Image (cartoon, rainbow, N blue to C red):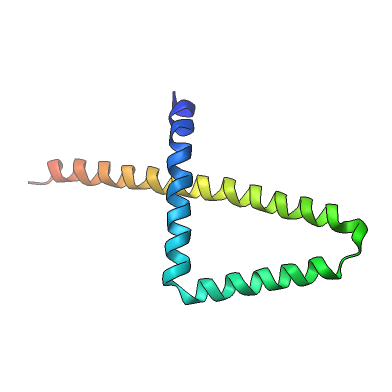
Length: 98
């Protein structure tokens, strides 16, 4: 049951994360600057590598993106769980205190 709920939530999480990144890139100049620097450094590394390592750098980048996607999903889900837990605790405490 939990797995099916998580798989149903997957497209919603992906959409929400895309919106958050889009908002972040438009409202946080530090993030935008760091992102540009990161892209520049990665491009420099890619250009400096011999041609026979192109596949390796592609696989590295693909693996990093996959790890980031999994991490983002788990962080988002945990934040949602934490919010539900906090709401539950606050709701219980509200009824326990006079």
